[in-house]
Length: 184
View (cartoon, rainbow, N blue to C red):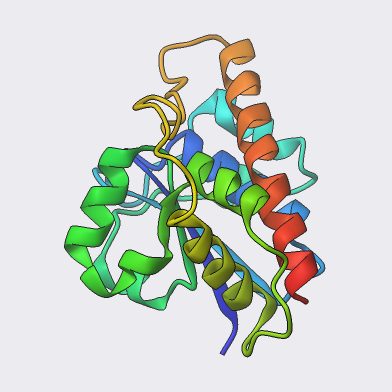
């Protein structure tokens, strides 16, 4: 079974598709699938044009991307669920309570990954070991400020706002990648 990372935002138009494309590029050497969905998405829509421009910079073609509404089976199949906001994290855990211990906001998981102790010979895939290490770090860190976990929505903004959001996504994925690297 191949591990999977699922990115979740509101409409699956901006943040989660950008995260999907950026993570695919960053995680390309790992046996991991990367997908995205939206808590309030309409199935079959296209990515926001500014998000598409960001996605195209990864070297992949975003033209075939289609939005999809989050379903419980997406959550139960994912090894790691990363949401844009705390609200979306709550929706995910309400839809699939079994996913609670592997569902985080992206920024929260980045903070936990940076603080996690290097996993030592855990059983399972590098992604599963990394998720377990981050989950353990959850109990050792002080709670973050209310806005520290949420990734701002660039919808309605300029191309520069989308690029800034993508930069924050990439900054948040890097500690995750480092933690997976120590687990593998």
